[in-house]
Amino acid sequence: MYLCFKYNTMIFQTKLIAVICILSTFISSCAQPIKKNANTIFNHNMNSSNSKLDTITLAAGCFWCTEAVFQRLKGVDTVFSGYTGGSIENPTYKQVCTGTTGHAEAIQVIFDPTVISVTELLHVFFKTHDPTTLNQQGNDHGTQYRSGIFFHTPEQEQIAQNVIAEMNKEQVFDAPIVTEVTPFSIFYSAEDYHQNFYNNNQEYGYCRIVINPKLDKLEKYFKDKLK
Image 1 (cartoon, rainbow, N blue to C red):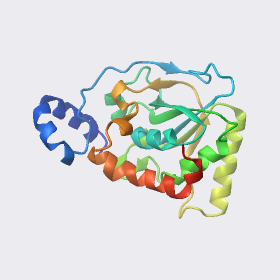
Image 2 (image 1 turned 90 degrees about the horizontal axis):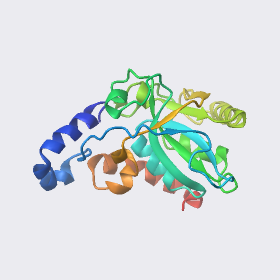
Image 3 (image 1 turned 30 degrees about the horizontal axis):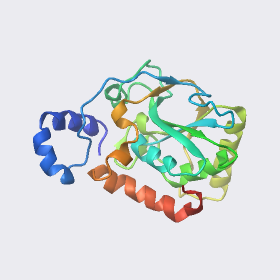
Image 4 (image 1 turned 45 degrees about the vertical axis):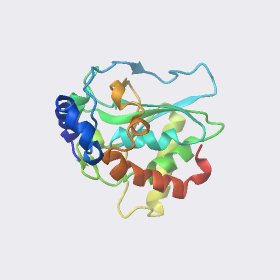
C-alpha cells in the first residue's frame, strides 16, 4: 500500500466494476467511486447534545485503521474520518494523498469521559500504531500518515505530554516517540465512502492484511475496554 495507490486503484475499479465483482476477494482496495468531499467542518462540541461527551482528534496513519480501532471501545460514541493539521481548505482525499496539503488523515473521536478517559484512549492510540516512525506507518509514507494528537483543551495537551514522557522513560518502544502534539484547529470530514470503511468492507485485502492485525492487538491488550 500505498500512498496514492489507494486512490488510483479506486478510479480503476470504478471503470472495471464488472471484473472487480468477480475478483474482489483478491483485490486490496476500495471499489467505490471517488465522491466530492462533504466539506463538513467539525468543532470541539460537534454532534453532541449530550454535555457529558467530549472530543479528541487523533492521527495514526490510514484513517481506515484508526477508525476501526476506536469504534470498538466502550465509551466511544462516534468516530469520524477526515483531515486536519494542514493549510488547504476543504481538502479532498486526492489532494491529501499528494502529501502537500499539510493535512493528516485523522479521526475525530466523540467519547464519554465518565466511561473512558483521555489517558485510556491514548494508551489504545499508542498501542495500535507505531509512534516512532516519522511520517510513515508501514508501507504508507508521507506527512498525511504522521502520528499526531490534536488536543482540544490544555488538559488533553498535558495528558498527552505525560503519557509520551512516561512511555519514553519506560522505553515502551525501541525508539523515541515522534508523535506530534499540537492544538486542534479545524477538522474536515472525509468523503462518504471513507466513513465506517472497515465495517462496510471487511473482505477487502487491505482490511484483512492491515486492519485485522490491529484489531487482534486491540482484543489482546484491551479486551476489557471493548463494546
